Image (cartoon, rainbow, N blue to C red; front, side):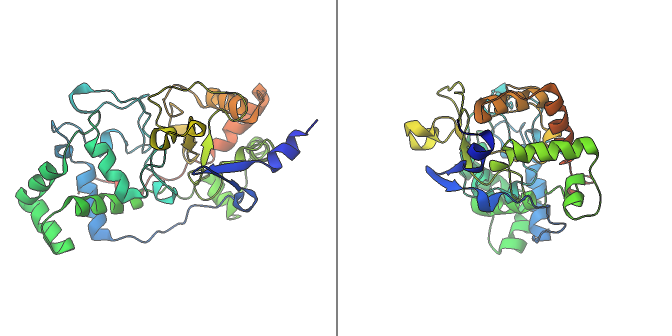
Length: 315
């Protein structure tokens, strides 16, 4: 019989159909206190991020699915133009700059590439590039700022670049766990038990690095199968390879206590239930109430500061 510790030590991460060892990735790192970005472009990107006129009916802005309090959406699925419902839970945009890819299935290579997907999605903003460009060029304030920053009339690419630059600023440093990693504070005995358990049972196999996730693909239902549906935003939706069903980018655990509901379909309302389900489906066991209690206590230490760029009114 294989001991659980030996099994977890040898587990691998699924990256684009290739399994890679995680031994070198198991270090958890604090979020940098400062990140380089272009202030003027981020200021323009903030205005665009809050602008509902980038949607087909003028009612949906990026911020409506990526709220200022947690970067995500408190609804199971977001509501787009004309009340249309999506079928995917909106991931937090906070700390997304540290993800190796964007979207649940990694469809977007980076933040700039990600901008086009919700804007063009008929269930979200349902807008085409040419209409956006006309709007930006016809608005005197936008027109002037694009000419100043990009030295040409507004383009969809430059708009995406500005929004991505703003999203780079949406980091949440100085969580209690970050300060613990920097030896600036201690964890409570309960939080420390949760952290040790997080490592012992194998959570850290997939949730590691700066974002404590967001740097690999993994199969949901690795040990015990998880239900699959054709509308899933999984890797299969891109590759159509059978083995890619229910394979997703591992979500970040940063601020996880604030981003309910959970999972790609927003079907799990509480963090405790999410821990039970992911433990059963991906680790092969059900943790006790005491273990869940300590894990939740640890995960709450991952809540960081609200991004400074969101303070005050929008530009």
